[in-house]
Amino acid sequence: MSDDHSHLSETELRVRSLETLLVDKGMVDPSALDALIQTYEEKIGPQNGARVVARAWSEPDYKAWLLADASAAIADMGYTGRQGEHMYVVENTRQTHNLVVCTLCSCYPWPVLGLPPTWYKSAPYRARAVIDPRGVLAEFGTEVGADVAVRVWDSTAELRYLVLPQRPNGTDEMSNDELAGLVTRNSMIGVEVVGAP
Amino acid sequence: MNGAHDLGGMHGLGPIEAEADEPVFHHEWQRRALALTLASGAMGKWNIDMSRHARENQPPEQYLRNSYYQTWLVGLEKLLLAADLVTAGELAGGQSAAPLPDDLAQRVLRAEQVAGVLGRGDQFTMDDEITATFQVGDRVRVLNNHPTGHTRAPRYARGKCGLVERGHGVFVFADENSKGRDKPVPQHIYSVNFPARELWGADATPNDCVMIDLWDGHLEAAD
Image (cartoon, rainbow over all chains, first blue to last red; front, side, top):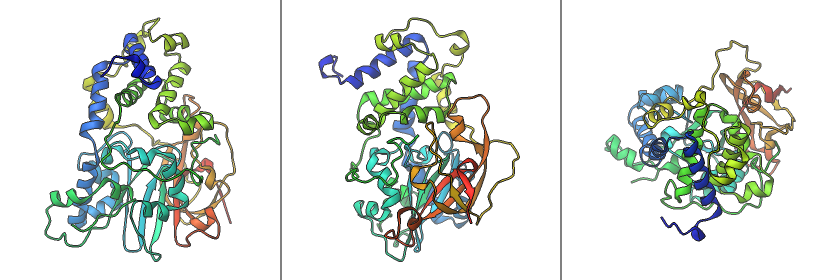
């Protein structure tokens, strides 16, 4: 990391200055900062949600539980915590395609998906998901038939939504690990579907 | 507030630029901005609704120009100043002029506490036994209120009618909680189904809808 201040943006300088101040004051503990970063950069991510989906695909009882009480079913797999206290799973079917957004900020189910991608938090997605969801889906290469109803979930409160994508064909013989490997982050937000392997 | 953050339905913002295999962070300063925000929250001087308002409360051109973590930085600076945790002089100079008061020193988040704190999450539900104003199947209208402070009722839904599809029980009312008063206000939350044509007019797709989570305080009976 260069110490040449002429290369550091104003924002970088402001953040560095703020960190220096807060550490100096004893308000933040540097090793806690590292632990926070590590949690979201390395430990928590969409691989969690993929395991939830894989289990729902292979175990009908778990799927029923997930749809009836997502918080409990997801907690059963150890995925709990901040920004996932009140989970709700919405199932994609032949008749219904679900899409999740937070138009007002960036609310997202951190324990199962990690931190949201930049596009999810940016103005274009937040603006268009509610008014032109089919256009948004098309931009991600996802086609939804005219006979399918699109339901867009605007995460305005503290309920956090996870899409249960449809299980693709040709996966009957797959283990849970293999199934989880198919499930993309984008399919659990609802902008994409899970393609056949 | 009717700010630029209330983006639902806005036109002219261009394509959604999704980066393939995007890393969690692009720059070191973003990591620090996230961590500083979460760690500072341990002081207990603000709640999540106050922090959302601090971020959204920017002039429109500033909000739209700032990147996500720039907005987090703006929000954090505001929250720290408003809570008297730092002074403007300290913020400008990057050096502490006074130590942390003892009562706050006890609250500092330690590394070994991080997993537990994050894993426990926050408390948003309330035990208050209040009767739900609305039932599943009720037709409701979003109140046409335009508060200057924080609200979770998006502009695109105000005055619009929908059907209550699900009740979620009693939660802290975010709009009130953002004012930072001691006692949270308990209200029922509902997932309300708004047909696309109700929101966007006759050209909208007939079988599409937007589900919005709204509190008692956002709704009135419609019929």
